[in-house]
Amino acid sequence: MLDLFLNIWYYFLGYAACHQIPERTVFFGSMPMFVCCRCAGIYAGYAMSCLFIYLTGKNKALYFPAKHILITGVIISSLMFIDVGTVMAGLRHGANNIRLFTGLMAGMSLPFVVFPAINRLLSYNSGEKKNIIDGIKPLVCLILVNLVMFFLIISGRDFLFWPFFLLTGAGFILIYLNLNSILILFFLRLTGHYTEAMLKITVVSFILSFFEILPVYCLYKFLGIKN
Image (cartoon, rainbow, N blue to C red; front, side):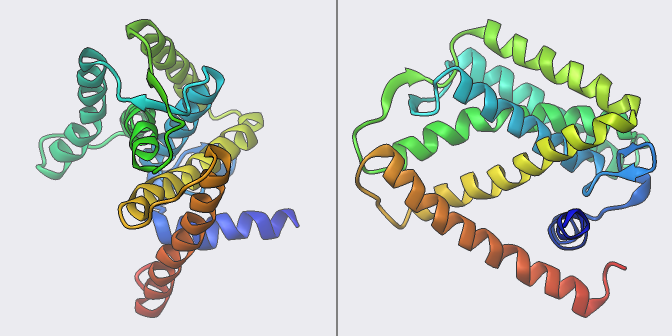
């Protein structure tokens, strides 16, 4: 069962979602992650912020972060694009640690826009009229948590494989479900209690995610783009 679980992540989900270049992948001992450093950072950072949002009871918040928080999030997210752009332009060589760090920062920032967007698009009126994050201090704390996670990951200790694998996998699933929820809600208005509405949209998003990943997997296999 464990082999089947890992094969699904390595040879189906990760295969369709990432280039999986070994030289750009985080290793814990001899065990690689199912996606590259940058993707792993994005997914892990996303999952960490989702956990933070639920622990602070802000998952139903209707309002986006305050302007200064939003600007800070845009700045730290842009580090990933600066990293990609400067490498593609030949100005510098890419480094896995930088890929991981900038991925974490970008993934960490995204849920603070995604959650209010979903809540605003739902057609019920039970959303809570509060900001998704209050002030700069919670954001700084979250950045520090991601920094600690960054240093733990780059240590490459064997025992960290499963915690990071599960966190990254959770972020992978959540990003697909959340972004597809926004897409679906542009065309479909769901009514009812928050839990009931979210259950409906999660099921539809899960189905859509599968049919997004499957054609990419089949295309890669058919064209022999990846081994």
